[in-house]
Length: 466
Image 1 (cartoon, rainbow, N blue to C red):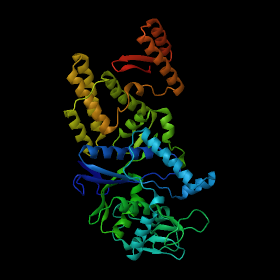
Image 2: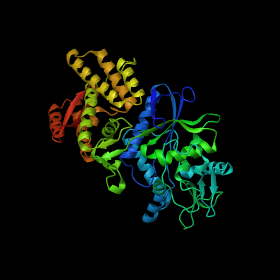
Image 3: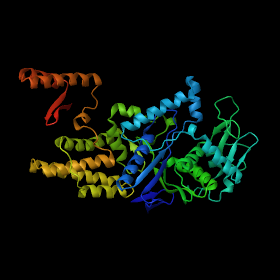
Image 4: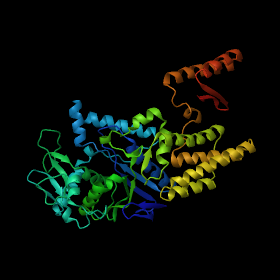
């Protein structure tokens, strides 16, 4: 397996720190607002990565944090006159539901900042004791960037004064303009947490370093984790500062491999809340099936910037529809257990730095060949089972085609209509069992009037939108 290391700027063979095991940490959401397409893209990329690692017989431990301490959260709680926890619980729950809708599995470990304060205190104290951090008379704790000779080697940046002022909080009490806060003293009466350094709130960069040390790092290793991931916008300053904290507080570097996914643009413009084009995932899910969004957002290589537009989304849906139409043709058949040549090639493509373009081309070719052969071969049972096996492998590896194929084509029907159709279907089944064919035909016509079609299969009768 090969991974493009976004720090070393080269594709590297993946060799885990511990044979057969992989530790993966990905920066998660700050839960003060709804998830947008950028959150979805990053979550999908690393969901796919865990699937590919697992398919290569590696035991993956995946951690993704929840930032539930943040000034934006406090601001929203004050504006809405709600408790902080009510805000963070609401948006954490919404995030989980929306990720589930696009087929993203929950990580093995999901630490929250509020549950990790002691780990942060321990790391800060180590850095103070070793001369890599200092306290100010106001009660703030800063990381001393000048004390770390490796600082900025991660992002390969040459930091100028304008960049410092833009990226790093300003304080006349800092030793160096680039020093960043690990603990911020708060004296304005807003939410604080008790610490050995006084009342305040932790810096954003600190929580990830502390969580990794607490949950994933092993003693006497060269790196805290195998892989650290996140969006490309996190490389500096967030990941740079994380790496500095870990390097200076422990005997290892933060990560052996760094992976960063590209930005999401909306109709060619970088997605940004300040620009008013931050497309919330919950809104997209009202218009499109979650699996369609999954297919579309994964259809471009993870390192490339992604341009979201409705025309390409419609094209992606047509490609996904082909998987479900083939699945519908073979509905009710069980797969065989043999590994096929297609499955081997598919895993090889995704093991090459998740080469999704090659993977999707292989899937298109398999779908075309399978449909053509089924048209000519009729009821060739072995061929059908091999094809079902291939579809099941796509489902496992990429998360496409996981639904009942008939239900997939029902998307967009309101629940009231679905309930009415379900009631009529039950009545029709009863009429057929009673050999009341006149009533059965009448009910069929009533069902078809909803703009659907009926399909009788060995597993029962199903309907879908026309």
